[in-house]
Image (cartoon, rainbow, N blue to C red; front, top):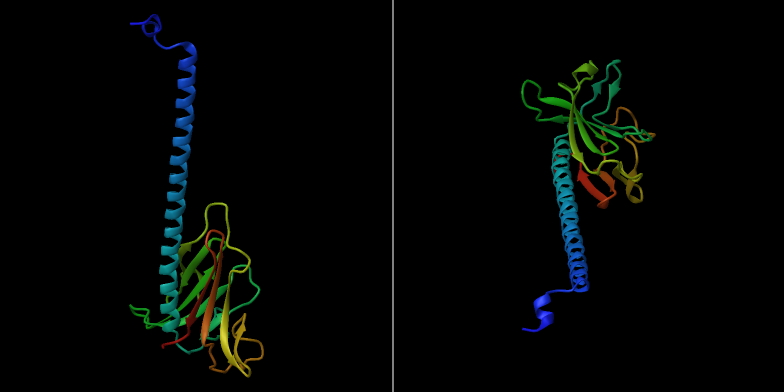
Length: 208
């Protein structure tokens, strides 16, 4: 056995070995962190898409079961079965639908676009007589904490005009006779989701 072999590692060799080990540890941690971050993003996106799919299914059912009947608000004024006021901060799509279950065969339902997603408002009947009877169902939360939906998020309506299919941003549209039973062909929902981009869904109004 040589004198060098009996002395073991030198201080320089130990320092080099520790440096190599530290570099490998940082690289391994960085790789693990990247995998965990990617898994978190994937899970968050999957959850958002699942929430969105459930919300769209319920919205499609509400629009498919819409009934063409005028109702009254809390002041006794007539309201159409489908209504959306343009230019509001949180657009509210109001619907009178059948198949509510229980004692009520008809129900007034509304869908609100919030800063973070969708929520559904339910009334026990068709006439809005007491706002304390309103029940709110939060649906899709589509953004991370601190984020909000983009400016292109909106409801719109597809109608058949003189030149073909046209898009209008409020209902009833300006100039429509209040007693008219005209309804749009479809409702278009546009969601501007930061992590997913623009999502567009065209939903027919009434039974197919």
